[in-house]
Image (cartoon, rainbow, N blue to C red; front, top):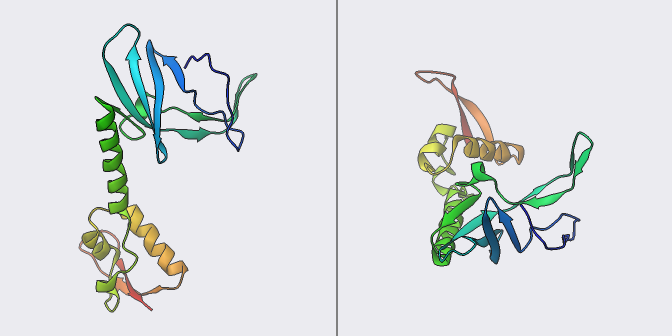
Length: 173
């Protein structure tokens, strides 16, 4: 990343991403912030065509490589992170639409904290997986652990499975 801009720091002392920089022969210009995401216009010099990159920049802590110290800074996603933390879009409008898609998926994945259907029933982790098919096993497991820690549910037994370990049976208090 090459830029002629003077480095600016945020309130926590992290170096901010520059508004304009060049990388691998492309010029990237900051267009706008959308929530925690940013949109950059990406083009080659003397070209009529441009694409837009929707990126989620992350904080990188200070670290050392041999004698060199790399300061704490906001990082632009690398090539391997595109598809998760960066998306190349054909237009600004498409970048904004992609942002809406991403944020809608995050909202869908949140577990419903009012599990009305299971309030008076016994249930297992597998029951929650069926009810919340858009959530991963690990998200539901963490949710159950939270409920146990907060003493909102308790383990009342185990259920034998055809394969693998027995499933714990939970009930709301």
